[in-house]
Image (cartoon, rainbow, N blue to C red; front, side):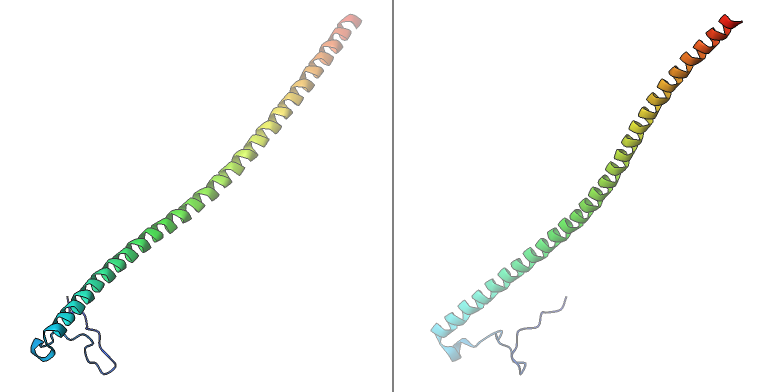
Length: 124
C-alpha cells in the first residue's frame, strides 16, 4: 500500500513538514509544534472514524432502501392477490345465487311435471 500524499500548498510545499529542527525554533516553539502534530494526528483519527461511520451509515441506508423496495414490491403483490381473491369471492357468491335460483326453478319444474303426470294418469 502506497503512502498518502501529504497536504501541500499551490507550489507543492508540504503544509506540515515531517520534522522541524528543535534547535532552530526553541523549546517552547518545539512543544507547540509537537502539540500541533498531536492535534493533527487526533484530527486524522477523528476524520477516519467519521469516514468509517459515514461508510457504515451509507451501507445501512442502502440496505434499508433495498428492503423498502422489496416491501413495496410485496405490498403490490399482496394487493393483486387480494383483488384476485375478492374477484373469486364475488364469483363464488354469484355461482351460489345462480345455484339457488336453478334449484328453485328445478323444484318448481318437478312439481309441475308431477302435477302434469298426475293429471295424465287421471285422464287415462
